[in-house]
Length: 143
Image (tube, rainbow, N blue to C red; front, side, top):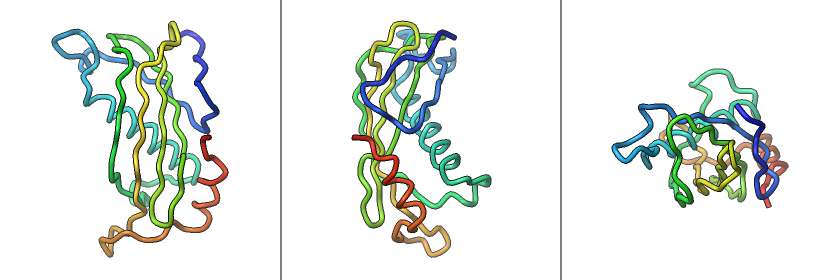
């Protein structure tokens, strides 16, 4: 892999993903649904690493919405540097923003945002973001 590209702004987390054959469609580029999986991987790794989580049962949020802007196609075996970080912190939810660029030439491939809701799976309801997690999100705000 080449050296990572540079994002348009400071993000607290970066993940490199490589397009595989199963990611592509009949036109030869990565299918639009694959991008959601890549965002999920970056988001989940960010949360687990930032909070020091180790087990799936510690996961305490749900995805409420996702918005993607496809800027340039990703082709087989291309590496995408995907950055993410929180952009807004509410009482029970937070927004994440994402930027993906081609490792080879730095072209912008995807911009996205998602909203996560803090969630108690046992009670099956939204809950306030815990104080320690709120502080970490606020420290990492992407501006």
